Length: 276
Image (tube, rainbow, N blue to C red; front, side):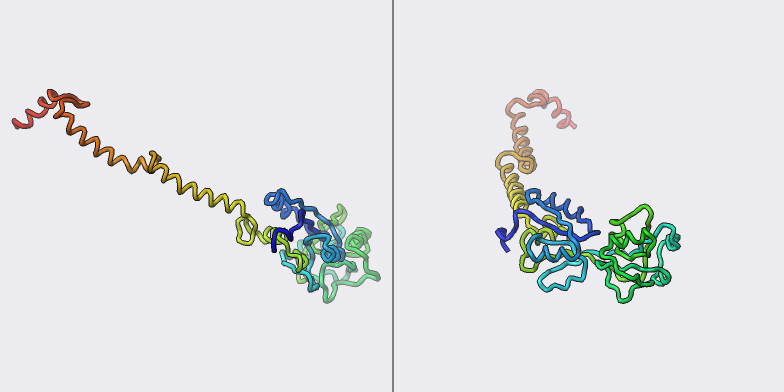
């Protein structure tokens, strides 16, 4: 892959419930000159956008059964049941599927969970979307099981949700066309995987060059100091300076001058020692 394969901007799609703001913020910090545009899409639309090249990558829910797409699983969501606030399960923190045996459990056509057998009693019709199912729950028609992010997305003051154990869970992944793994896609993969800007898979030629220059500068400074009196060179010359000073001090008494007195001062100190 080369830089010429990369788009001048990055287009990122995401399905309902996914919040890409954390990764988008890191993108703007690392690649401020490359605009990133967000494209909301339904679970079905996002694959059409990826195949048509209308987006560079997208956050989807697994499974991704398309052979022409690559995907990296990112995290798994907790499954919850959305119920009216006065429902009996609202009194506890979590329930099991068997606790819904007497409830009508709605099964929207865009369900993000892969059920072998849905708990509770089936509704006469399947709602078209999760949003429609939540509206029916508010109307007292039944309850619906969804990933926690969708329960938050469709939050209503008259509804609440509780964790359901031993149920299928939704996994969120980053997907992109396998034949269009551009440099910008690689950059975004590095961000969602938590790579640092200096990672071997990241693109950071400028910082690497700056570090090399910094290292070269650090090496040249001591050499300059050795020749012209830098901190390292001064420390090494001090013993030599002291020896030179000692030779000069030895000559000064014989030459008739010194910083602490001439020959006269020296005679007064020396005579008592010779007499002793």
